Image (cartoon, rainbow, N blue to C red; front, side, top):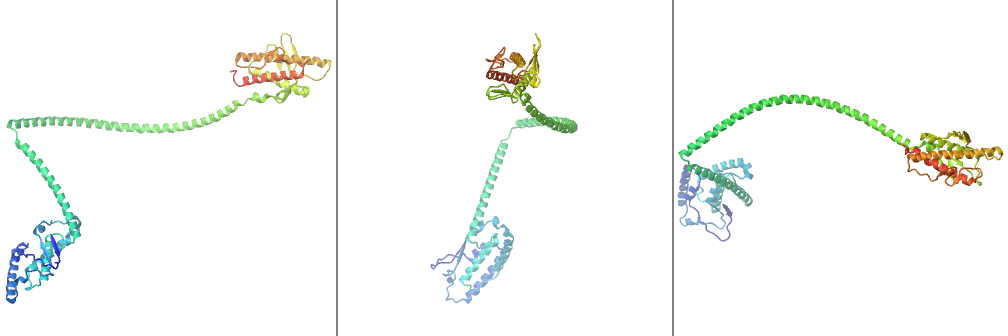
Length: 457
């Protein structure tokens, strides 16, 4: 450890080592030390003769108040490591060159004789400088050091010490293991035991050789099997290439078929929508539109019947009867129903019904408002025609009920009456006749709905 300070006002006396001790501490060749000793002796003798006896010799040994001092501990000098810490390694080259120069300077200064009468301060500074140069020449660090650099150096040395201790502990543990193994080996075995161990090792060797030969044979078999597998792999690769080629062709064909199928499905969907639309459309409802207008039942806008306060022309009534007879004829034709005793002849405003059995007769299904003897007979045949129409409609209703018992009609038909009113006009009331014709149109509407909605199969 190097410490330097200026003394305070109070003077401390520190004992100084002798020149012989200083010379013994120096790391220099013996020839250099001898030359320096001779020069010191010569200088000492010259200075003794030149100095007055009145001046005491002990005055140079006591330190002056303004004198600095340096205390160098030998244990510190010997414990300084030869290698620099990691943060000063980049300065090794320059430090080595400075160390060589410093060593040469120290040797030269040692060889030179000192001034015969140096001052105490200069002598102390020269001693301190020599010590610093000595430390710098023996280590990789330039001295003196500041407190921060000294702390960094101590930290680096402590880290190196810890690493060295860990390495030492590893070596100690390894040495212990080696010693334990040697102790186990040193215990030794008897000659018979050694022979048995040798025999056992030879047997193990023989078994290992047999296993090795078996493994070699298995390796040869595996090599042959590997060659066969490689040939099979080549064949499989060719087969795989053919498979993928055919697969790609199938995929392309499937895509084309899918596209064609998609177009067919689109066409089918469009046709299905058109068909559904057409199925929902009922041409019979468009051709025979049955409704009502006040107290009158209408078919295609033609009123069927008449009342005193609303005189309907007979031309309109006859046209309405022509549409009504055509509707009954169409329903019977669609149902493939044949009348036994009648034949319907729809001819517009001049439609008629022909009786085929048991007596043949023709009944005109149109009337007139004229009053004379011939017209009265005609109106009588008109009543027979309306009764015959009602009879034909009754047979159709009965046929429909045999096909579908759930069909219900609001009015019963009995002879010339539907419900509670008669369809005859002669000697009757026009209001009742008009109401009976409205019941006829309602029954025809129910028949038309059942016939056209598919319930008849």
